[in-house]
Image 1 (cartoon, rainbow, N blue to C red):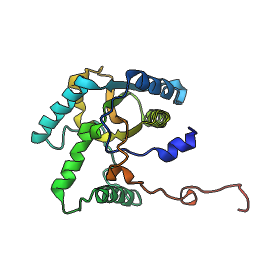
Image 2 (cartoon, one colour):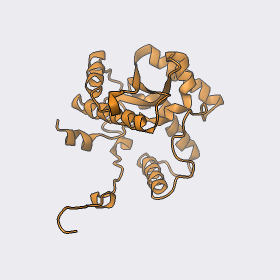
Image 3 (spheres, rainbow, N blue to C red):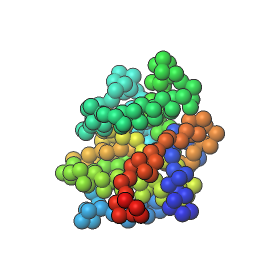
Image 4 (tube, rainbow, N blue to C red):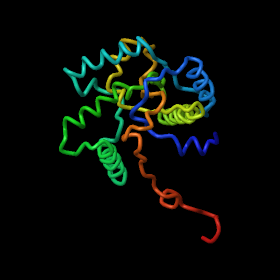
Length: 226
């Protein structure tokens, strides 16, 4: 598969098949993704790969806690800016509206929206969960390094016919996850990633979010006629 094919076929998959993914495959994906670039070769990331009973126990624990605290635990970082301005807020709003529309959940259907949101914490049925940490001493440049690693991992997964969904929502349950994984204090949970085989027939997986055009995101200097 060409890299461009992987980019164009990658989506945030929100319904997976229960088919297992072998340790060998997960290991191969991480082995290739670890060659992602990072400033000064710091490689400021660390992963926990979970499946089977340990993963099921974690998801069950969170499901129980959500009954009492549906918003989870206070996050260690702000996922979005406090005052998200346009066009970013408009893009985020449209993404959410398109997502719920794909499964027939209206804006007025609050229970339906809550139910779908809770699927985040079931990993959308994926058999593998990857929990990605960053060394908490790092700054914004190293956060971008972790982003390059995540993108590399998600693209490599396409080589194996697998899909992913990166979920910063897991930051809401960082303490409960730590109770199960016991990471060193130096590591801060950045996100979770679902990994598995996509349910091709699920309506929610038919959604393709929009992107701005090349000319809307690029100023051309020195190319052709200025």
